[in-house]
Image (cartoon, rainbow, N blue to C red; front, side):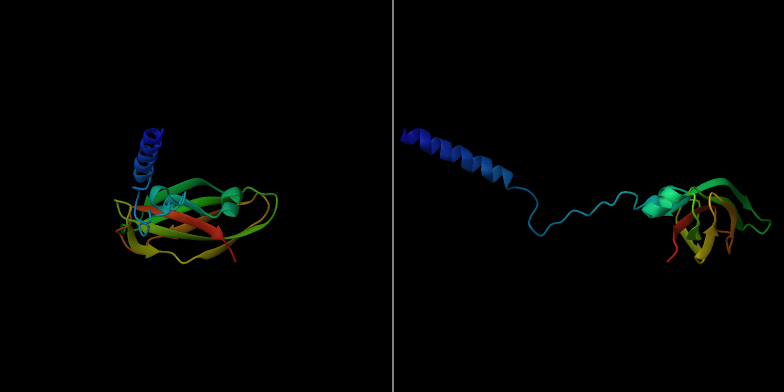
Amino acid sequence: MKALFVSALAASSIFLAGCASGPSEGAKSPAVVPGADLENKSEYALMGAHVQRSVDFSNTQKRFLPDGRLEVITNIRNRENRRIEVQVSCVFKDERNFSTGDETPWQTLILTENAQEAVNFTSMNDRAKNFTVRVREAH
């Protein structure tokens, strides 16, 4: 009986030692936030749950001007039956989707019920090959 108890105690000690061999107390894994890298993967970034419900894009045109600068025109549409106020900005990127350091200032856009409005962005230099249009709630 005593031998059975000792072997059960030894087996449970080995089991608990195996469970405790995880990362040390100070080690933390990076927090993953869903959608946090949306600007890196898409031409559009709807920043916030309210904006994601309320705003949609359509008919985007991307063209290069004679001097090599990139011009982006996109329609931003209010999907709600109420007036909304958002802010829009554009980040211009190189061929590898890294920012060229050229981004437009945030501008306020007021959209009436189910309205659509064209917004125009032009890069400041000829390094821009791609873009991300960002939309956030106006405060």
